[in-house]
Length: 344
Image (cartoon, rainbow, N blue to C red):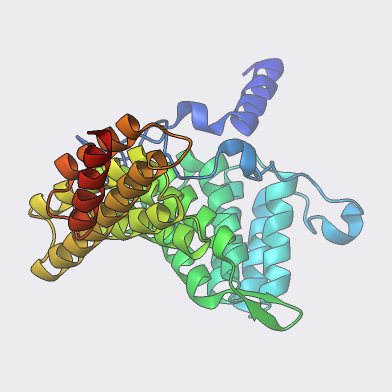
C-alpha cells in the first residue's frame, strides 16, 4: 500500500471510528423505539456535558509512557502485570498503550482491560464507567457493542448504589449518576434495560427537586416504550410529579386544567392498579378544588367598591354555573341575592 494512503487511513480510523460503525443487532432501536439521534426531553443537553476527548501520550513519557517498543509487546507486558495481580501497574500499562498506539488492533483490547480492572479489581465504578464509555465512543466497531453497553448500565447501577467518596466521606452523586444513565440510553435506546434506565433518570430528577423535568422524562418514556411494564409505572409517577408542580403553580389556571385532564386520562387508561387509580382520583379532586378556589377568589375580586355590581353579579353567576355543588355555593347564592336586590 502507498505509505501516504496508509497514513490517511490511519488518521481516519483514529478520528472517525464511528463513521463506519453498523448498529449491532439487539441494541439497535426497533419499531416504535426512538433512535439515538432523536431528542430526549429531560436529559442534559450536549452543551451541558463534558465530552470525552481522545487520549494522548502523557508528558514525561519515560515515566508514564509505554515500556515496550510496539503495541503488541506492550499488550503482553500489561497482561503479565495483570496476571501478577499488579492491578494499578497493569491499568497504567494498558492505558499507555491506548495513548501511544490508538489506531492499533491492540488498542481496543487494552481499553477494555483498563475498564475491567477499574470495575472488577480497583472497585472504582465511576472510573470504570468513563473507560467503558470511551471504549464505546472511540472503538465501537472493534468491541462487542451489546456487551459494553450492558456493562455501562450495570456500572451506572453500581455508581448509584455506592455514591461518591471525597476525602473518605460518602456523598450522593445524583447528577453524575443520572448523566451516566442518560449516556446509556442515548447509546442504546433499543436495549432491554433502556425503559428501566429512563425510570431511574426521572427518579433522580425528582431527587434533584426538579419534578417538572421528571414528568417530562416519564412522558418521554411512555411515548418511546408504550408497551413496556415501565410505562405504567411512569404514568403513576408522572401523575404524582405533576401534582407537586401544580401545588407550586396553583395560580396558573391553564396548568390546573391541563393537569386535571391528565389525571382523568391516567385513571381511564386502565394502566394503573386500583389503589393507584384511587390515589390519582384524590389528586384530581385536589386539583379541582384548587381550580374552584381560584374561581371563587376571582368572583370575590369583582365584589368590591372599585368594581361595578354588574361585574360582581356576572362573576358570582359564572361561579355557580361552573360549581353548583361547591361548599361555597350557599354563600355565593346569598351574596348574589343581596346584589340583585340592591340593584332593584
